[in-house]
Amino acid sequence: MNFLKYWLQSLLMKRGFIIQRLGGMPAGNEMNILKLLVDRLPVDGADFTVVQIGANDGKSRDPVYPFIMERGWSGILVEPIPSMFEKLSNTYRDVPNVKLENCAIANTDGTVKMYRVVEDDSLPEYQGKRKKQ
Image (cartoon, rainbow, N blue to C red; front, top):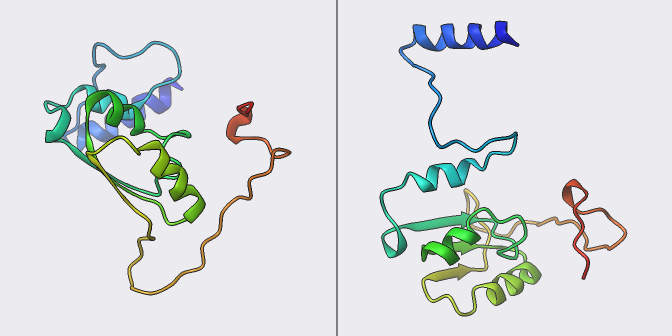
């Protein structure tokens, strides 16, 4: 592992990059990169708008939900699947700074076939963390 680290540092240094450890980094193996970046943003609240394509229900494993709710971010959230869009609408029902769009994003106008995983309690949730209802 040290060889790989040394090799990567050498390669990047030849191209003018410097790798350095930042203070205030979390301990352990789990690191929320989005939170690290957001914590370094100079703006908060209405001055910041997020666009999320494929917003799902707005909560399940959603990386922007906490920032919208805690920091008052504005947002445009897009979800093409009607049943998920209904859940998304319920999630942000009382959040006026978030605009919702029930559409798909593509490089051409028209209709596309959408696929999704069928909701089935016998299937394990991602990473085996099934929520009990």
